Length: 475
Image 1 (cartoon, rainbow, N blue to C red):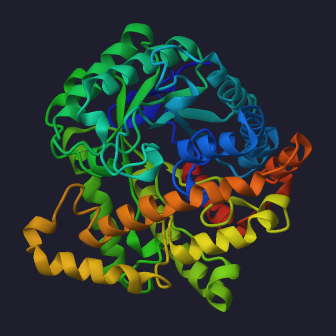
Image 2 (cartoon, rainbow, N blue to C red):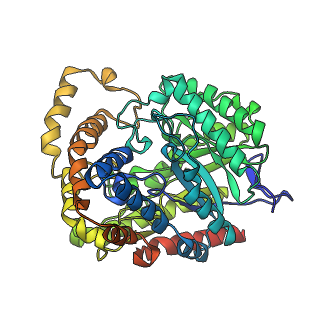
């Protein structure tokens, strides 16, 4: 088994034959996210709260069982049957070190990661290791698990040093595993200086290469993997490296400015956004990987009779994006494989113990719009709109453009800080109290809700992915 390599604009095998990676992200697993698994706030908040409510031992038991059931060999077999060949594995640094005990490796972090990498390899599936959450938070969003909108990684060098240290541990552990297609050292950075990211990438590349000369490295662009405008000639110092864009489009979300009808104008907008993200790579003859993309989907318990029409529209967006990617023979990893029904290729059935137990809580979360991802704010917008209007009246447009603008407009910032950080914080204990009084058997039953056998398949999505994976493979 030979390592995948970057050769110019392509990924290739040992004989120089092109390999196109087509797969999904295993989000919500070793880096839990609120909209995927139904909790409020951030992962460290709910882990802390659950330990307070049922005790550290029972809390650890539940989360360990969750990791065990969420992704198993049954999931790998299903994934393989779809014709897909790569899984991007996001993970949280907290599995490998503690903030109160930094730079002391927790070898327990390898327990489930090794298990999944090996299961994927057994069935011919590549994996890409994605540090989705870094000490201090590498971006301004909930999934960096910092509990704040400040990306402190970029203003505290020690946080950066800890990431370098962690990648040294990971490189040492995985340097001989050729079924790992590569390392994705940092998910969706938002460095307001634009320069510290480039310096950090130089450091992490050098640190990995001292230990592991084999694996490809995938560097995300700045501002949520969308901006390479300040990378300059940095690529000349980075061997065997590709560059990751995240190609989301508003057309695939509830906040879309218009219905998507696949018009020529709309398709040109899709293409223009995609080409702008990869412009630097195309100018320099570099390899591009689309590490995240994909629409979200309506759910009948919330959207009712509009569900099918909404999802038909979202599938149309999906098809048009894939048409672009196919023409460019682009490697991609759709977001995401599994969740509780909003975006996953498979999703937890409403008939499972977890979904029944949290039914009312999830409805409350939806009504309060405390998740940032694809949120419908219609039930609470009248509460927040006066604050948005107040800021708009008091500050001219230039002073409303705080980084990471334009990805975060002013109204988005108000929502992130007020709904998704402040209000969500008040829901954390309420979520944890749903576990009060449960014994290990009951906790295990809840965790089993996430098993493949307890999930439904988003067949229309999976059919589209299979058809397009086959098209590219046969070209």
